[in-house]
Image (tube, rainbow, N blue to C red; front, side, top):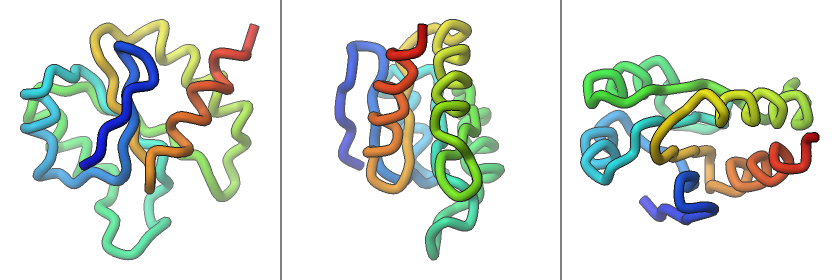
Length: 111
């Protein structure tokens, strides 16, 4: 897992697996956000499995897929709202981390 800091409380990475969640929690994250639609890639775990593992590790998990039929600006508005409701360090993930970083930047542009 290659985690990249966007801000001190918002970091991004590529696809995570359920087995990664204990280490993510141990690293101090309180929330994960999945921005990868289920079924996007071969071998990708479904969000439900990641969410179960997150809950078992004491993490809050949110599904905010970007891709396919989702409109990035609508998803950016949802992310902005989620960021105001979430405390502690967040780890957002997608296939590579690029969408998670880009959507964060879009969310910051919304007035």
